[in-house]
Length: 407
Image (cartoon, rainbow, N blue to C red; front, side, top):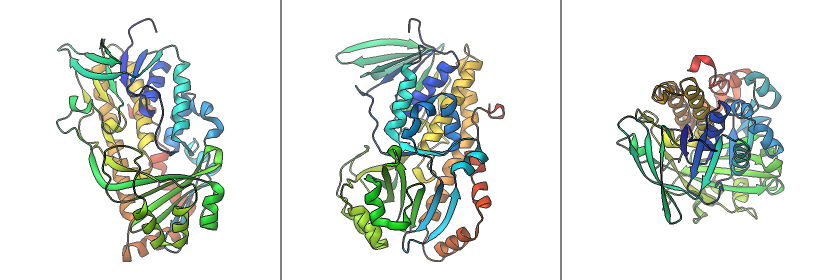
């Protein structure tokens, strides 16, 4: 890149790489700074619903991701106590026909690798690693001056627009909000991956390797789905708890997790104890989507930096991807007036993300229900048709963030 970029992006995760690609698609040059010296992604599996995959497809990312992603045939809800089926939401061909895009599950690192490969193929994108933004100063006339440290040197960079995609513990959030810290929800997420054979040995027919399966219990919920070309099963168990640090993928004593799963059903206990199941844990944090996302001085927060939503609706990555493509399109419409684009972006996106956050809160309540509420839930779910179950997701999966009515 020989000219000054139209924007500086901080953070090379899913949100940062997606908006870099989306802006380049509209002819806008960007420079992306990532603090880590190498781009590696923590975590394991990731669900990409049709509202995300349609956008990634237009950016050429789905083609690069290729067979590393798996196309599940359904989302199955299972009673964790007796392993009886409650409901199954069709995906596969039926879902793609209804929502005009596939539902995919993949390893998070595979998606980030595909995004990075696409970004490095674009002349309008420059990716700089091992760079930390130490300080940001805004001009009265708009634009930012960044003090960027790389090794022992500090470089001053000026930009008309700063886009912060630095995640749930964002350093840039303080520049637009008085309340900057994320909030611990009281839940923790335990994650592991297992070979398909080991997972099937533990759970038998209760686990199908071609679908997303959610086991529901008052004390937890456990989600299992295939990744890595279908060779492995990603496991995520979410339950109340605490961990010592605000950091991803911590090692901790997994005895409490194993006891909770075994107490619900011996098969789930065997799954937790399966050979090769190395459980890591992280705290589930949230960032209030109702607070400010942008500054008229030339700053936008996207993804978890703006509105980290707990994983109860499996929409964290999708919301970041929607943010990115919409903001890029708005910036392309008014390239000489980014402030106008920022205001339009925040106004357009907030109602959508707030609604998704509310759906996640509803899922958490229903999935962890007990007593009469759980009995009523099971009865309702078992009585619903495929059509009714799919219709519940039309507003979510059928949404196109680039449709004209959204900006």
